[in-house]
Length: 151
Image (cartoon, rainbow, N blue to C red; front, side):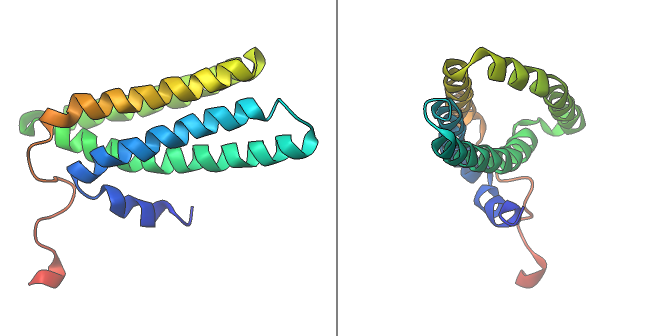
């Protein structure tokens, strides 16, 4: 919670948000790997790996919020920004609905699935980074070009 606002500044422009997809991908991969590793040892190592996993997934969630907002605004055509933001909100609602089921299934399936889960999400982030590369040509839409302090 303390890091949400400081981390958000790293995604203040569309180019910066696209660059954040790399650490976002790493955080997801690390989270999946540490959950998988938590099953390989005793209570102490499981506690350490699960704590690391919680930190990695929390960092990923904060980065995802920043990236998601900036890119959804930047990729929307001027004439359909409301529709694009509506779809983004719908996607977040679907994620909240399906996410607990997916996580429960991954927990019951075992450590290999967690590693695969983190890797799959990380790869999705990297694919997104590649796909949006040529579409982010304009200025950032979520940050005004002139701030009050510049007057």
